[in-house]
Image (spheres, rainbow, N blue to C red):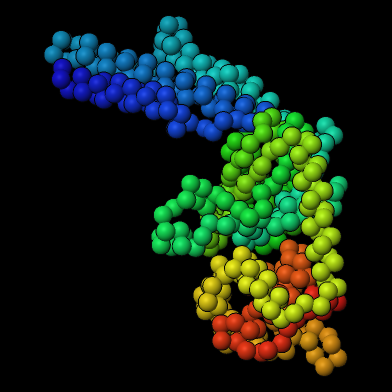
Length: 387
């Protein structure tokens, strides 16, 4: 008897622990803020309720049968191997029919509704956002407003290498959050420039792979202002966990104000290409760009991680010519590598994700740091000409 009581006691203790944890709200899905996420949470909660109920009902039947039909009471095992009468056939098929009903009706209807909303290609979108993944950053474009920017991880390296305590949003913080209006139907288009990534925000109930050479889409309507965090959900390579997603959902008026600010920033960046930068300005800005964009691969001191990520310190490419005597771009030269990357390696092209000033600054910085002393300064106008 004690042997039977122990598993039952343990089961009820586990249930009590779960109910207690639920009171603190720390073990279930995040708050749903889109219709898709609400449907997902509904199906999840329903599934957990039904699965838990079935578990305890079956467990109770097993315990009852073991106790009631035990050998010491004189019961003998049945000898039949299959249902013979109508009653036996009924009790064999009834659970099967019940599972079909649960799967296709109780779960199927809300799941079908969520899939339709997720894949809605018939309703006109209020706006479109293009999401491009590349190691290890996300680029966001708002085609209707001609706005685009890059979003990268900002968690300090000291926290990553356990030299400082982890922050509240460890590996879930970025320099440029995606700003979106609430109450608008948004069409997201995803793609990638290198390997497969996946844009995932749990509070939206969305997760869509970004695949090189393909455009894939999903739809979402954010119903509540707030900051929502997610991350890449594919094993995209080294530092896969360093591609967070941060979305700031705001009212329409605030969103339009943010769009105007982004346009002004881009105009200023474009105008900077025509300005003659001093070497000090290039070095200062180049250091910022390097630490944000390049340091994860080539390391902050430029020593790299050979053979995947070669060192920039003493590199023949970083100290060699980047334009020839006729002013043309040197193939596989320093500027060519940063602009166009190198096929078949982890070196990606930055022509679409960095501005002329960013590329000119970071190339200048790399050519005059880590012990490199070329003494030259690459102007944004040169980068603009080489694109």
